[in-house]
Image (cartoon, rainbow, N blue to C red; front, side):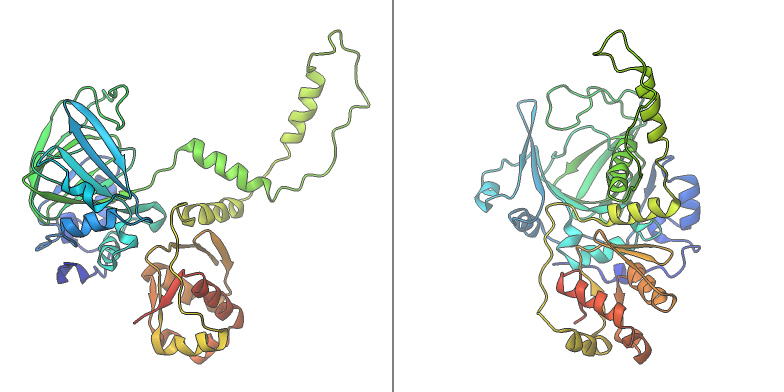
Length: 392
């Protein structure tokens, strides 16, 4: 696996100018570009030529727990195959007009997880994953748009990007992808290794490989309002406790027995008006919901250790979150892969550092922290679940 050392130089200040953003500060980028307009950044990561080879990407696409797709254009029609693939499938591919896409590469490649850390000026709650694509000459997935923000970082080779901020987003009927019926190029660039293009949601774009090319797509999740409301109400129903039963001692005679009367509608409406929630309900829901792993994710098991031996190892080895883990927090409530833990004031600083930095050095575990039995039990539970591991 290839990895350029410069990627490890994490920016210490979000207020300073970032080469990753073409000399803009994170605050400038958020104010002027985020969800507003595209930004082309030449040499966002100087010397970057990718994290893995095309063969290694194809190997990932053969794994059972990896989401992958093969997109091809045959006789003017788009086709999509879903992985996992047999390695023999790749030997049968033509010389052009296809693309291999692999999702969640950051879950399987430590260097990919480190790459995502460079985008920590965007909250982890908004981050989706790192998708890597490979295409031979002229390969691509056609003109399309995404409903989320994305940074398109060029790895190996070159890719021609055409973009359009057009209002016409009508799609080709019957296509397995969201291919635009009409695409009017407004700007275009050829990206070299280390170049990066940021695109806000709904900006139409079309990437075409110039020779063999690999692109690293840092995508951000954007749930629909319908999805958030539905999931919140599902979450809320488990904790609702509204007393009473429907009663109508004032029932009036109705002309039509099959009619749902206005009197009943008003009574039920008054019952529903009793549904209330607090900001704590919203934050707890968001923490659990946003940190919940996708259904296909399976955590790797650690070597079993009992609690005393686990605690003994902490100052020696430190801990790091598993690549598949997501840890978020709000105030003193911490969320690990859909689970919630409420911390004391003494525990909060340590867990905040773990959530932000995704690791804790052994020196963080002094004798006072090791006496926090509830915290030690929680860390041990997360260790046994594969959510975190000792650093090597």
